[in-house]
Structures are given as C-alpha cells and as structure tokens.
Amino acid sequence: MLFPPECKCGARGTCEFRHGRKTCICEKKYAERDGRCTETCMDNADCYNEGRCLDYNGGKFCNCFWGLSGDRCEIIDDCVTGKYKDCREDRGTCRYDSTDKTAVCVCPEGKVL
Image (cartoon, rainbow, N blue to C red; front, side, top):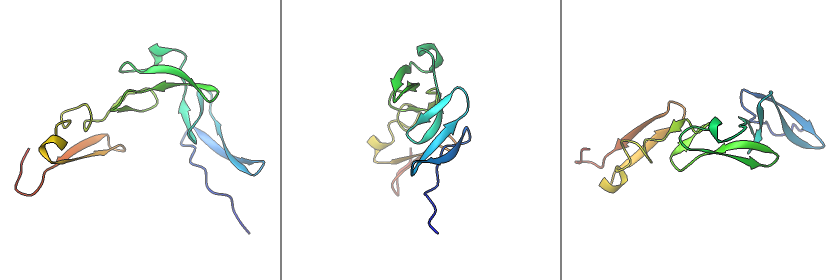
C-alpha cells in the first residue's frame, strides 16, 4: 500500500489529500503559503520592521526585507542585519539557527572576532 507524502502544514493546520494531492487546511486568520499555514495580514500595519502586506496566491501575507523572517517579519537574522553582519568580511562563517533565533560567528583557526 502506498501512502501519499506527508504534509508540513505547521502547528496551525491539518493535512488533507484531495484529488490526489496534499492540501493544508489552515485555522482562521491563517492561509497556505509555500506549503505551510502562515498568519495572514490585513494591511502594512500588521507587519513589523517595515514589512509589506501583499497579495500572494489568494491570501495576504507579510513580505519581509532581507535579514528578516517570521509570519510578521518579527525575526531579525543577526547574520544579515545584526551584530554579526560583518562576520563574512572578516573571513568568518555566520551560522543562524532559526529555531533558537540565535546567531554565532565562527572564525577561521587563529582568528578571533
């Protein structure tokens, strides 16, 4: 027996298989965006850090600037805009953990930040 691939709708949705394809059924105020139930917005005021509320595939979602993420653009990636933005210029490697929302600059051997 073959099983369809698993959905990754996130905590705000459930997966259903309709007409041979997976579909996320999202909670109220959430809609499917890129295969995941994402919080929707009404206008730009719903988005943080100057994000823009834009129409996307039948829903309205916050569109974030480079270095920002999250449903409302509330997560700041320190590798891009924060305290470690110069890490790469110093030949280091910036590693951002989106789960913990933390960044660390890893320097080449013999170098310090």
